[in-house]
Length: 398
Image (cartoon, rainbow, N blue to C red):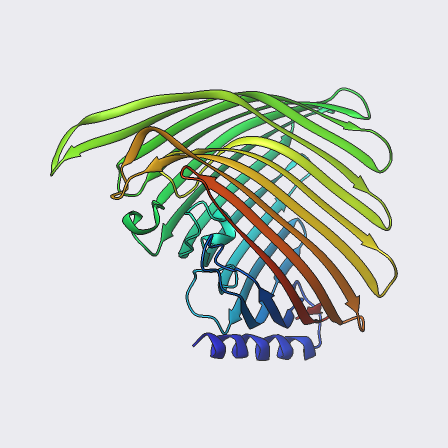
């Protein structure tokens, strides 16, 4: 079924690529094949097993551009010879949509997405090395408006729902929904400096209705143009979360246990945008929705660097390190009160792209993934190598 779907999408993309004409609709498909080898794709501590896979890759961005309206519909997929969703080499199917309306005073953006993939893509080994199918749906709205020559206000709202294929008694991951919203205000104090005030409130709830987190934070931020190519943005503030867990004995509800979590949240990003070398580095502390009973406190550092050596060769380095403090859950999904588990996760990748022709691209990449979690203390690691061959079709209007 998946193979037929990929073949159909490929034939459709090729048909669009041959279509002549002009109009507000356009397509810029990308199709490819990937071969990869990983020493431990399920991130097990013991009895690790190396695997090699081959997969088809598809990316079909369809755009509609007219006047002040921009619409993007983007299906993408990885269809491999592996079965199930228990490893980093699992299939994925994504459908993303984005619409933006611009005017003289601001813009309104609406986003939505559906996805089916492996929990390991998002949670690493937060489930102690167990990967399962992850089905998610998300939508969001952003509205921005200039209220003065130097001042701008923005309101963001988002909703998401995540379901896992196995019950919490098996993988410790809990199905959940998350709703968040908040305003922000920015003021350009000088040509180089912008001051921001940000606020956000969120509600995290397990779909079985047993656990819930209500959180809010307020931050003060600043953005500075250090030079023509360097930019620094930073924000910091206070966050508070109130957690509750319903207690049942058989079918009878005895009450709810509550707790609070206070702390500092922050975010800092430095950006270098040059003609050949670009870099983005960041650090943050946030309360994130995950597959656990409450929100998880996450510290993260990330680095992305690209270098274009010539018209044919370009290189990329990416690294992401995260430390997540999660509530422990028992065998039936109940929270173990007063206990927490800590996960440290590192994902790094080196990529070299050779532009064989303007449309054909050959990519070589090497990855290293490590994680440590506990208690009890455990760890897993995987080294991988891959080779991708893809065809980037020219943008075609129809």
